Amino acid sequence: MNISASNIILHSLNYNSEGVLQCKMREGELPISPSIEDFLMQLHRTYQSKTNKAFAYFADEAEKPQVFQHALREEMANDLDFVGFSQQAAGCLVTELQKHDFAEEGVLLVSKYSWTASDYLLIALLQNNESISVNDNLELQVSQHIETSKIQLVARIDLTLLAREPESNRYISFIKGRVGRAVADFFLDFMGAQEGFDAKVQNQVLMKAVEEFCDEQALPVAKKQEVREVAFEYCKEQLKQGDDIDLSSLSEQIQEAPKLEGSFYDFVSEDYELENTFPADRSVVRKLTKYVGQGGGVSISFDQKHLGERVRYDADSDTLTIQGIPPNLREQLKRDALSQADDEQPSDDQSPPF
Image 1 (cartoon, rainbow, N blue to C red):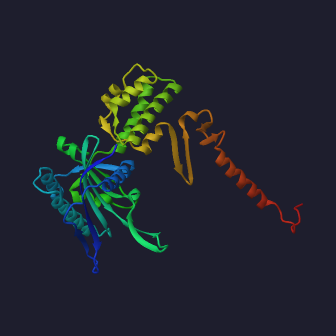
Image 2: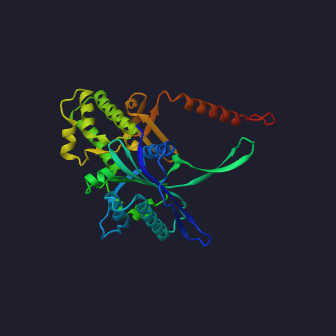
């Protein structure tokens, strides 16, 4: 399913010779064309695939300045045109960047588009990268391009959810950012937003609920594994489609697979603080069917169904025994073992030990 773009504009952020961050603002929108929509679709797909997203909402006026929010509401009410709104947004971002002394330059993209049943506002600070190519005259030429697969400073507002449920704490989503980068220090602040809904915690609670539901049902190991597999496949498909986990739909699938007596939806509705819908978190969901751990230079991952069969754990000695290791790992170990044995053999000019 493709997006349908209604507005897009670009502004440029760069430092002048005196080291002052400036914003060169475009005075008119870009005309919507198939190539523009293809570009936005690439950004949309990249954003949908990001697993390190967090959620936020507009803070109260007493907590954070609401210049951006006021401008957005005027634009949504048709009291401010899209160009004027985008220019105010660019000004807010420059102000925040100057406060935090981040050396961020690039192209600020502001766009509105529709996808499925919602309207969105996408705000992204994109980087222009240089590339070298060969032209028809076999000459090298330098050109600039935007790498859509590596976007980091991005926020998206679900305008439909904002209008329908202004009290929600999740109508703004954003990428948490690279390690060591405090994105919330400026990219949320320039919008006057604060973190709210925590999708990772929701996923962790869901995983816990699945395990405890299986325990309450007193399921044998095989049936318990079947429930995990059903839940995992459902969540994986939602991730693939870019859709949220829906507890009602998940419950129906869990109910059908092993033909359980109790209702998973009723079970989680009683004691678990779960939203009816929330985004799947790939790093958490995969733990439904896998044991994953790393530390001290060792990283281990294996399907839960292998525990007790191909993989055995001895709690007393804190030891894992693996039978039938992966062929590619086996070949590496054999090759290194042979190399080590050759290194330990005495050379021709050495006398053998007595």
